[in-house]
Image (cartoon, rainbow, N blue to C red; front, side):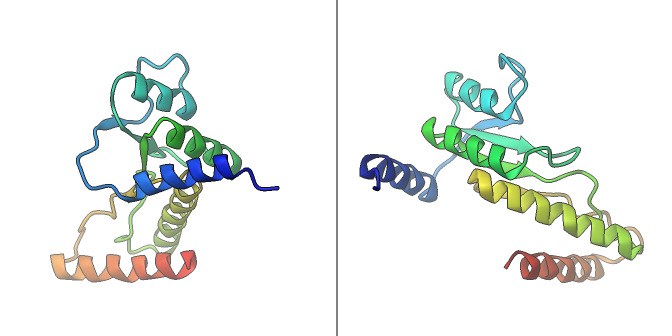
Length: 154
């Protein structure tokens, strides 16, 4: 049997988060003043501080699994905290080494998937550095890799 009251609450929270049209202020990662260094406690602390957003920092690797990400999303929605994701620093879509580019694509995909399970609003990553590429060449190379990301996420 469907618990309609819970279902409606989830739908309303999703609607609020999906209709973002303002400035949300939050922390890059778990606030230092959190009781425990965890995303769950970070969300609660963000809310206590009167903030309304928190970035899930995966900067040194994605350390959430699907189940925990879903729990993080549930807590964030209950506290009306918007989540975003920062993918690992170890991304270089402009590398001349195909295995580095492939690993970078994998890191973006992994970040996006876990962010999706958590209900994150967006994902941020640093695509790489120009190296010997011109601006136009760099944009084209990044665009090609991002098309691959979208294809694999679809």
